[in-house]
Length: 273
Ligand SMILES: Nc1ncnc2c1ncn2[C@@H]1O[C@H](COP(=O)(O)OP(=O)(O)OP(=O)(O)O)[C@@H](O)[C@H]1O
Image (tube, rainbow, N blue to C red; front, side, top):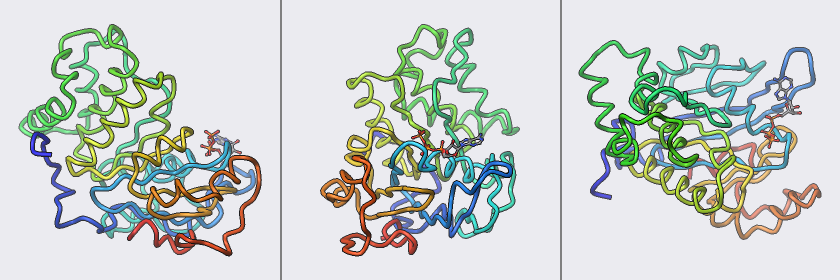
């Protein structure tokens, strides 16, 4: 797409190189039982990897571990090959990860410009901030059009674009999106997924968690089906869409992985192909 700006981390020569790797991760909350039980996910450069699965499978927990909000009990997290397993949230941002949380998080009484600017609070260099501002305004035209307006005057889908723009101000290598379709009607959900594709096409890798499994898999390059804190099935998203085990899982069954047509999850290989 020629009208898109390109992020430094994701030029086409990098395609396929894993930018984010969670390897054999175990994690949980306090003294409670483990939520993630040996989970492996790889997010290649310039790709959308989508985590789907039933309620409570651990999808949001994967994003919390990746963004440093929750420290894993074991396993490794690598960003661009560098071990960042013990990083806290601020150091994960420096390493190249940006997390867009579930729900709406714009400050409605502040302008779009002020909301986007908050994303750059860790950036000191004014030239970098100016470059990033141009980048997000080009990527999300509505952000440029409504720059001086109060964020609360925008529609839900437009506010989501403001959140996306804010997350890109730190020049992330990988953006973590937690249920971005939440609260959006079908038309706005489609528009939102188009914006996710624009991010990918601009060279930013995306790890996406979605309840709306079918719609998300139609958008993603790679799908990972989580169940009971592990990746149960993974592979190219179009193949997963056609896999009857996806339906079985959502209907409450526990599908067998023995007749796997896509790579077994523990190897994480589907996400690197
Ligand atoms: N802050 C927390 N403290 C304790 N337990 C938690 C916390 N957050 C999540 N959990 C538990 O971890 C498990 C996985 O939750 P998580 O939110 O990761 O699942 P999910 O797959 O994203 O679910 P959903 O699709 O319903 O959002 C659940 O059993 C949940 O109750």
